[in-house]
Length: 320
Image (cartoon, rainbow, N blue to C red):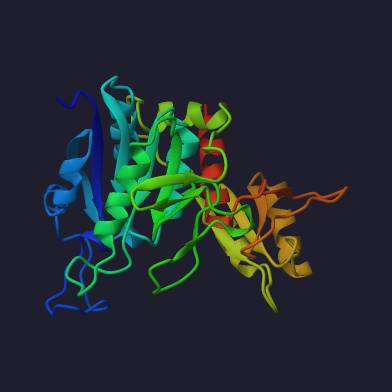
């Protein structure tokens, strides 16, 4: 008798997508197949030493992911990881915003059990869909003794929630961990671990989750937007966002977070007016290395989209 379980949460995405024409990998509609059907279509999962339990949390194309789904997802993950008979979790997710959801869940929950996000670059109706193998690999990681934290599994590669980024529009191996490197690889159903499991410091994020997921009232999330440095960048977009009530700004700078002088001037004005400003880099590899005298805070190695999530949580935690 199987006395421990793996819980699989569905949120939609390409992995649950279908096309009217078999083999069409572009003209498909995401989020059409329910998670229970995806699980039942994989007889190999029946050989798992764990009982499998599936639950549909959402059914969306991940380009349309929103804060309401994040709240519901955080609630369900928190519920299941607290159950003593749960070994780990798998979440099926679209590729477009997977890196943001992974970082959000790691930051607010820092789970002591594995929470594995997986996905597909081809719909379920493709001639050679990649979703089934990705699901099998994700269950293998969630089943691994000693696994913990939020990770992403795609094309046999395991990425930490802190480092994973989508870097390709079409190929099956669409994700990278940048110069941090992958957490590990899944090889024929077995995990080969290369470095430590992700762990988030307890602090503001954990305070934020109490408000967004478990509070009596559903508070609006802080307004944080992203702007980018490029040739000819000026401050008009920043000033328009400030006038529209933005509470935080992340700037994707060039190189080591460098900024056009006109854009930098507008960001300094925004910061002086009470808007929180964080400086990241648009480069895939490397991080912003702060210099003495820097006035704008750096993103602590986070990509622009993850720095945005971190800033929202920080603003929420400090909101009285």
